[in-house]
Length: 297
Image (cartoon, rainbow, N blue to C red; front, side, top):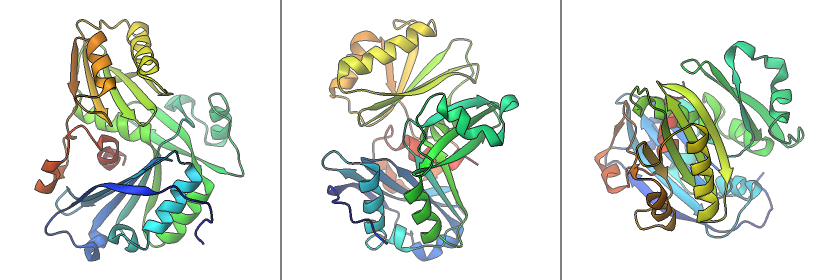
């Protein structure tokens, strides 16, 4: 049943469909959902061609909540072909929240997942389900929570589909691993969301740092970036910094980055997967976390 919460309006900000895309062929396609309180993105990958063929993006017009976003997702299930179709070869949902922690693979105990999370987050068992995702190349486990009403709705709506939840940081780490070049110097990768910034540091393709921070101003934003650079002994005048996410060339956040860091570049779409030519109209540095759900096998 749809939630009865008063839902802030979500507006569609992007819609891209390949000319040959047909939702009726969902049995040989993957549906990827990037889910957060303020933004929902839907992407379809044609598994036969290993190519993204559809994308829809919805953004809340005013401050929203997880409950409101779940209600919006339910509403969309009767208005967009991507959710009207219920049987997909794979459905993978990326969760955006700060309820996650990274555990070395050698120390991971399945029965202790909730205990791991208590070190970094307040877990409400009646409202959140605990999941984990394995990162073999990084020898890490990402333990995170999924809102219980979201999990209930997704598993019910997509009965007959293979459904998997991962955390946004898992998608980012796997996508970055596909893009990063082995380097003796630490490399900082930044993903910007609405009021959240995720910072990932790799060195020699080994994870040195990954965390997500809430910010309300450009001063907060650059503080976290410079703090991580300092902690990892990186040089803002020499080291390259790559940025993906919700910022534009003329934005305040980009300006403050360029003020304090000499070498800032926008990231590209991930390699190892194709894109319909229709995606050429989109900024390359946007949607990276949603695209990178493809690499969370």
